Image (cartoon, rainbow, N blue to C red; front, top):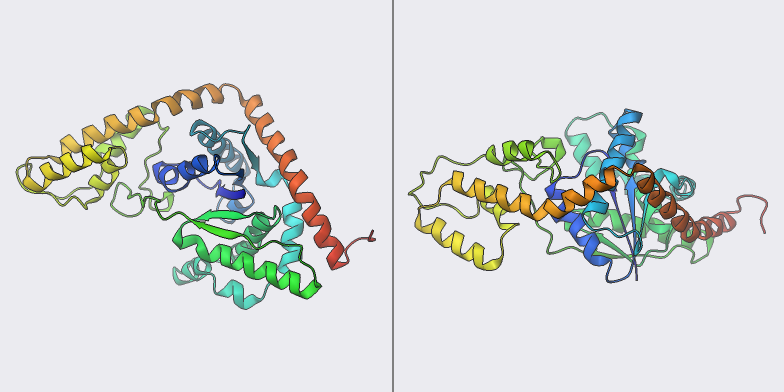
Length: 323
């Protein structure tokens, strides 16, 4: 089974990314051939500083490796190290209906927000389709809110195959991550860099402490019962086992649990959970050439899988001199 996924390098990873995606990527390494990429082409729709983009790519790569992605078992590469994906994007764009792109939820959301929309954002699903289809991927891990992207990739693949009378592009299946935690941010909304409400797992400890202690809570006194559905309890639960959760939730429902106590315990658990990963990341950061070698090796392995697909698409479309 070939599994593919990527993460955009438009911001540094936070615990929402970890529990929402990275942890699942690491687990999927045991179930098949994993291909994971840092989507710096995609980041061009939001990051407009070249030096910052390169910095963010390095940060995300370090996060992935520290969190357990094994380059010996999986392919990890930087998207822009495989320019073939851009050629396939153009080939696919010529068979992609405008109406399909206009139905993109992400695009419509940006328009509804009154944001300036460029061609890169409008055509984003075609680049995403190329990322997926170039490897004849079997499975793509997605949350329910991302399922449309995969459905669009399947639609584009079907249309190309139909128009040129070939079966070159494989239709991947979604691996719906039903057990993915929706991680609240420090303000109670979904954790997102867009809301400036994140907690990075590898921030300096003082910065993590400031973020945790600043989590928004209500004014309920220590003695009063607490709503265990509150964001602070959801965050704490990520780092507690079933027995601890049952005990804490029972105490909270009875009254006698203060938010200060809960935040201190969350901070302690969070630092312990990510402690070994932090040490690994600090060691990797001291060896930037080794990290670049991992990415270069990943790109070579990715090209071995993707180049034949692009060549077949070129041949079907009548590009070049032909064989």
